[in-house]
Image 1 (cartoon, helix red, strand yellow):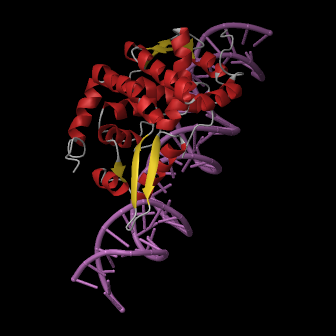
Image 2 (image 1 turned 90 degrees about the horizontal axis):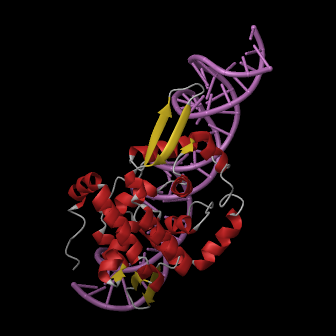
Image 3 (image 1 turned 180 degrees about the vertical axis):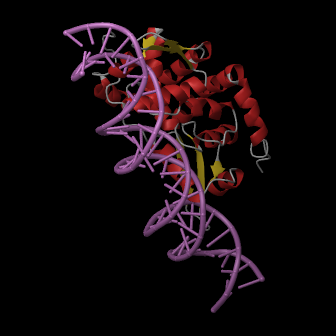
Length: 124
Length: 124
DNA sequence: AGCCATGGTTACTAAAAGGTGAACAGGATA
DNA sequence: TATCCTGTTCACCTTTTAGTAACCATGGCT
């Protein structure tokens, strides 16, 4: 889960926390939604396996980027949301995104085409 | 090398380019040094295998973050330096680092202890 | 009783990333 | 001639991550 044990500075620490195939998408949705149930998140990222999504969320919870909120009802309801720490990542993530748009436009364009079906969808 | 083919937005693109165990260190040195020979870089990051360092650099070159400059002398001299694109990452990377220092202080502290011998060293 | 739904786990497989050690040009040097 | 030096490649091996599929508990429906 958490990778590189060689971390020499803050940059490494942060990137380690963000490393994970689905974490950027998860962050994307949580930045746009405040609170999401597990299944909701899962439906919205259709290509990911349940277990993997759980792994990534668990990892992010461990790093205190997200908070898991469990209502002990039946059937169970579990909500995931950004912690303050997670929210504080906003500007930095925005900077990364801006960079991509300014300096890696080609890659992003290609990307946007590939992902329209997944992102920007109606979240219930 | 370049990982996640699932990229839904700029964030993903950027993180994909930064994902790699040694890329943060490499960036660190190139941000501080302007130009470095392969061997110099290799000596300064002692725990990495030559091949792996080469892989990471090749990857970064592909993503146009660094520029490889080869002097056809004997023995060969190869310099690596940041491209403009790479330099433009500066602010975003600084933001990630600042986040770590403000919100993940514990992790960074632990880290600083582990890495003193590697970072902040006398470059040549 | 049988089935659905939710959020998990478990055991296993596959693919990617990283690591090791040897080898290679080919001029310089001893 | 033998050895060194630089940047690279090759053929493998190990460790990490991601993916698959089945199974569980539990209460509400039908």
